[in-house]
Amino acid sequence: MNSTVLIIDDDPNIRETLQIALEDHGLKVLTASNGEIGINRAIEHKPNLILCDMMMPQASGFIVIERLKDHFNGQIPIIMLTGNNSDHQRRYAEFLGADEYLTKPIRPFDLFQVLKKYVNLPSPAYALPAEEVASTPYY
Image 1 (cartoon, rainbow, N blue to C red):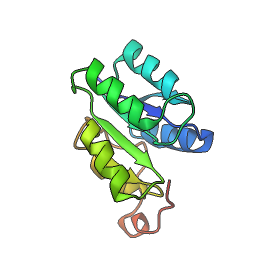
Image 2 (image 1 turned 180 degrees about the horizontal axis):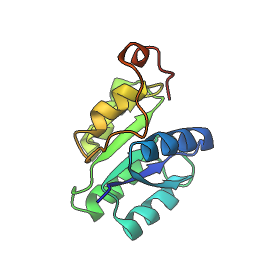
Image 3 (image 1 turned 90 degrees about the vertical axis):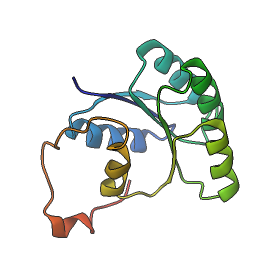
């Protein structure tokens, strides 16, 4: 059975790019355009993993982490994927229960190395030759 990942990000380009990449790797993907929708989708669908931006309308990534970690008793991993590289913000996200704190831009290879820790990651529908991995565009 394929794992389900919920992407919560207010940037439609990020959501779409991540959705395509994750689906190419055989994952089922749900998306949400703000924190409040993301919280509701997570409660309704109980995904195996959540990728969450920090700065969003309706509810920030911090609120998402706090509410969902409490609701699911910490059973669903949450990865904060954000453009904010602040150590203070990282520590706060970790304090709230973020399992990982990744900064954008991120290479697909690096993202999938982290995802493998949390979900069964089937082989991609296509694979890049090893020499191209280093030059792969960032998300």
